Image (cartoon, rainbow, N blue to C red; front, top):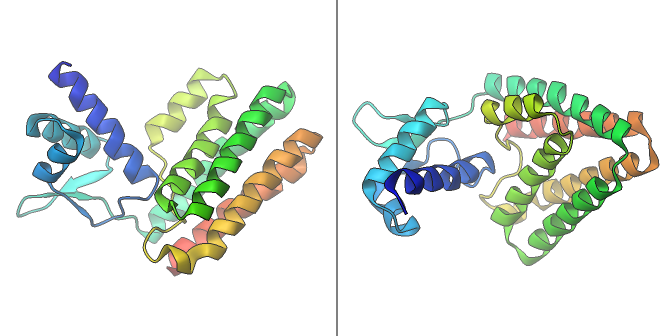
Length: 211
């Protein structure tokens, strides 16, 4: 595989870990450790770090080193506002499409989230949470909307991996809210799906700032 392909694969893997909150703000990304973990060269790692820095997901320290960029309360507020604008619009498109296959796919993601939490695979649960919201956007079929969402690098900001067992209520609440959104879409209840989504995002903002 070419070096640029390895660099892109590396970038996608680390980006996924950051957006799903498996790599939290302030964590140092050690070049040699990631090269060994992903079985790629340090050149590929370095290129991936540069790309992530360009997307403001990581930053380089004054004395060297690459770190996951910390999210401030103001960042969290802006992220929540952006997600609400984009995802409410996406729900409106899905409501008009009434695609049963999309509903089934969202239900499968919910099942995956539940299974991951029950097994204690909290990193996998966080990735399933990200997939749930990405699927809502992707299923609109609107390429420009998808591009805006992807380019925004919207991270998951409320589910925590540290001391995960102490955050079980958050995981359970997230599961319930996701399923409530899907059920509302299935029933054709647009208002309920939007109200639940906004409640879900607002709760995430509150819990992240309080953490």
